[in-house]
Length: 82
View 1 (tube, rainbow, N blue to C red):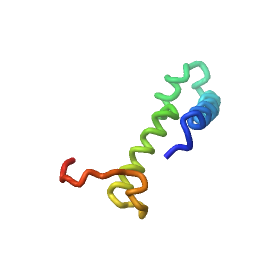
View 2 (view 1 turned 30 degrees about the horizontal axis):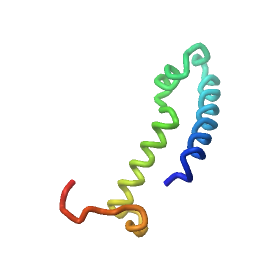
View 3 (view 1 turned 120 degrees about the vertical axis):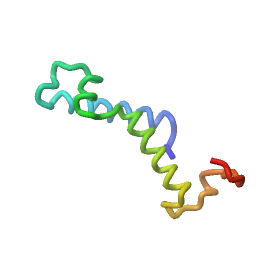
View 4 (view 1 turned 60 degrees about the vertical axis):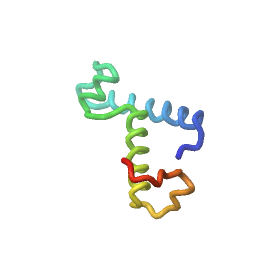
């Protein structure tokens, strides 16, 4: 789903930097460390958000909520297992 590991890492670092700066702009958050700001604002680090998004998109694809050819992305087990 990604364009390459290095590309993804670079993007994540850039977006994470923007998120770090943006959370400091929220009133009362300036003195908190980054992880505490995320908890107070009920946010996740970019890596967690991206992983969650990938899981959701995979679920939609496998359950045919997206009209794509599954064989292009997955090798499905034909046995009826979960």
